[in-house]
Every structure is written in C-alpha cells, then in structure tokens.
Image 1 (cartoon, rainbow, N blue to C red):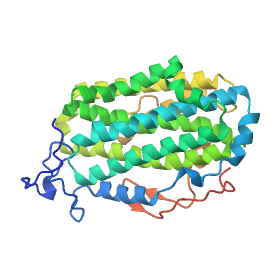
Image 2 (spheres, helix red, strand yellow):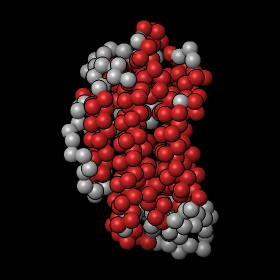
Image 3 (cartoon, helix red, strand yellow):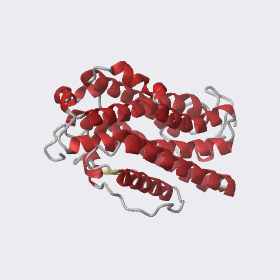
Image 4 (cartoon, helix red, strand yellow):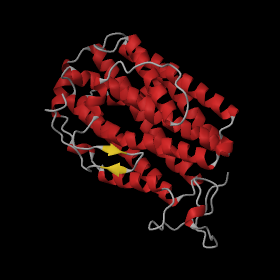
Length: 340
C-alpha cells in the first residue's frame, strides 16, 4: 500500500470512484460530493457530541478517593492507567498509522476527529488523576512498571506495529479489526470497573467523565465496524480464510488478555465483579463485536452486568449510527438524578 498524496492536482478521480484505500484523491475536501454517507453522518454526530473535561465536577471524588478501600483504589488506579495507555496509543496510531492510507476524504475527516477525541480523553484522565490522586506519577508509570499491564499493552500494540512495518492491504484490514477490539472490548471493560464504583455511590465525577468518553468511543467503534463492513462489500477478496482465522485468534487473545487483566485488578474484592462475571462480560462484548462485522459468535453468553448500559447512556440522546439517523444532538445532563 502507498500513502496517499496530500496534494494531487493531476487526479481525475470521480466521487463514485473513491475507495477507502488505494484511491487517487486530489487532496481537496469537496464535502458537497461524498461517497460514504455513513461517514459524513458520523462526522456530524461527533461534532455535536463536543464536550470538555473541565465541565465535569470532580470535587466529591477527592473525598471519595480518600475513603474507598485499598482494593478499590488499586482497581481504580490500574483501570485508569490502562485507559491512559490506550488513548495515548490511539491518538498517534490513527494519524500516523491508519489515516495516511485512507483515500476517502469523508473518512479522513472522522479519523482526524477521532484522534482529537482520543487526545481529549488523555486530558480527561489528567484531570481525574490530578484531582484525586496523591501518586499521579505512579499511575502514569504503571503501563511500564506493572508487568501484567505491559504484557497486555504489548499485545495490543503489536498489530498496529505490524501495519507500520509492512503496510499491505491485509495488514490494514487486520488493523481495522484491532481497532474494533480496542474500542469495543478493551475500553468497555475499563469503563465497567469505574461504573461499578459509581453504582455503590463512589467516584461519581469519574463515572460522569467516563460517560462522556464512552459516548465518543461508541462513535469510534461504529467507525471501524463500518470500515470493515464497507471493505467487505468493495473488496470481498480480502476476506480470505487466512484473514478470518487471524481475526478469530485476535478476538480469542483479546478475551483472554482482558479477562485475566480484569481478574487481576479486581482480585475478587470489587462488589458486583466476580471473576466469572468479568470473564463472561468480556466474552459477551467479543460476541457482539464479531456479529457486527459478519462473524459468528464464539461464546454465546448473555450480558451479566446489563446495568452498565444504563450507566453509560445519556437520556436525551438517541442515535442509530448505522442508519445515520439522529434524534437529538446534545451534551447530555451532568445530573446523576436519573442515572445513579
């Protein structure tokens, strides 16, 4: 694969000839003519979801953090450190590793917007850490010093590094699946631990910050699921038996890594998150993500913590991203009266 030209006046590519990769774009964003309507719809949703970390009141969390158990602190710190790593990785990965090969302007738009949002999430975590923690440096170093976390991070990054080292169509598509796993399994798992604390009335500001972050991650997940499904329509030849086998291995590895990590950080000490519940929730997420991109379920389990869905929703926003229809755009209420 070749990186796209950022200035290409010789191009005569018509809008209907655009491709997700391998196209010949002019470099001009002519958004009155677009091929992938789902991408432009998603762009508008992302714009209207704009929020800023300092809008979230973390005052109560300062006192909560002092009074939660040591086990809860450990889980909070490690879940936060995991999220810090993933958003840091994703900010650079999208711009430096994925977007250079995408030749559709409307998809370039949403990848740039996603990268901005990942950077915003990094600021959110900084606000959370600075607000509540007396060991902020330790939290920021956990990705290197905690070997359980480091081994997981190494595995996550390896697929992205494979694309960077060898930019082929096959590796690009694998990277799309890796992004789906990151956005739809690893992030969601991390969010669940923080929602669990909030469910018992603790760290509500942190949970509200995560709600905003997760609303962004929903659009990121939809982005890569739509990329995969669109590539399947346009380039079915890429969905070889070899690719399918590799994707299944990736998902199984993700479930194993995240289940082991979840059990490690909770240590059976977080009310409502037993080892069995942690593992089943990760398996449920994997099945849901696989079905969304045309694969069969691997685990066939129910969601054991359905209440997490209620915690993550904004009551005044109803969106069907796949159909591209949006009932209402808004930031949502910062009140917890209806949700906690």
